[in-house]
Length: 380
Image 1 (cartoon, rainbow, N blue to C red):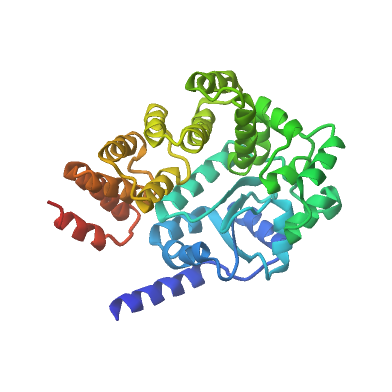
Image 2: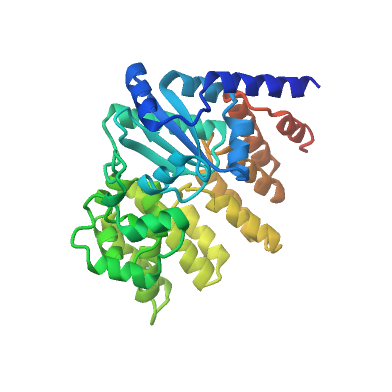
């Protein structure tokens, strides 16, 4: 009963702290200018489970609500019900839910990212957005003022209906574009998360320019498609590891070091897991090229677990991978996965290390951790 009362009180505090009204964006921009705050837009829809989890477990969190209240105006938009939803679907590319947009008082986009964020993830995101605003790092590939005629017609139709974009229509569109750096020009490919040969060559060879225009999160699926298509073509007649390494050497020069590490994860998965069916080879590759991006680590853990494929060798390599990429600032789910794989390996020291790391994160962000304490108490 006390827990129920606490949750109700937290939600009531959340409701009174932030405006849930679907305000006209212009009035929110005016409010942001008056208060010298940024605008945090939560794009959701009814029935979206991660969206509901954000409302239940993350936004009411005291650390999160304090961070938002200090520097941001929170605007929640039901994408499929509110009029503003149609505008945002076209203006800012919403390819996953929830999608979080951060704007300044002039409507300039600072950040576009999607997916569930635990309290620590969200606070880190807010901090990065604020730093980007201070350093005038904006995503100027997006228009600050919405005018439908400024966008390619096939893009607008797809953004609103999710229909009409095919490989052929994208090819026809690309053939008519001379400058993909022009405002809104690349958007049909960004929303389709794909690239034809022309766009692939441009995005790979001028990656940083497009990343600065549209943001790494929105651009990455297009980069993935471009690189994976190029990899398949390059290795059509020779899929040896030597040929794979040669491909990596040829393409590394186009990307900053941190971005290249993310690409290595995608390319390594394609080569070792899909082409060679070599889980051990992939894990060794991942350990040698450590990077934590999205949920590749936990997704592969779930896949292998579901197929009952955890041999002693694979389990031990997974533990080494966890040690190489999981830190105290990683998502709570990933820290728990690192603990689980160490327990599977019988490495109770490693298991306790990651459980304690998870507890410390929960304490830092005022999340419940009784279940973690119970897990620690039963560890032998």
